Image (cartoon, rainbow, N blue to C red; front, side, top):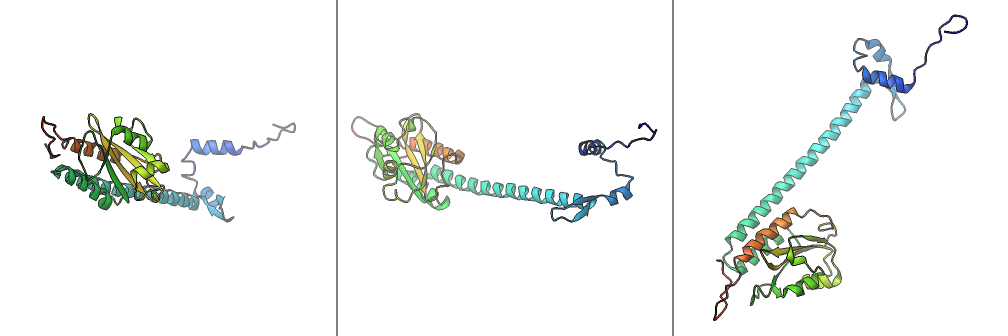
Length: 243
């Protein structure tokens, strides 16, 4: 109250108005005339009504939700296709009756079904002596050339860009073309070898790439390989056929 008895109107801050409207979301329910007088500046500089602004916001939110839903559906379709490829690979591995047919099944599936540009398999020579279908080396030689001393002692898939020495060993015919790769250890109670895949695209197998499916493929192949470990007798080593 002023000295002359007149009331001085109290000015509310923007924060107070916003707080009041937030606490009373139904304030405009019976105040259509007031609502129609409200205008909100648009990004283009034009003034639009509150209702128009609400409709615009809802449309933007709906568009965002539709985009998110479409992305989720796309991911789901990609996962379905990937699962189907893995399923076919597992079935072909299970049907292999010889070590050579097993190696061919994996190469064919990864190269054609998964469309991976470069695929190689290396086996530990002490476990698979006399195998000519793929390159075989002593365990330490494989680890040394890959640059990871304990690679064959676990199931950790290694992705990224390899050094020249490693590329020349793992991709001897295409090492200049491989820009990213994944090294999958093959291990079933003991080191059996490695599966390597490569791409001309640096993003395909970059560091941080998800390796769930590659790890699973490695586990399936490892268990299948274990069935073909030759049984040594006193006189000779039997041919690597499925037990």
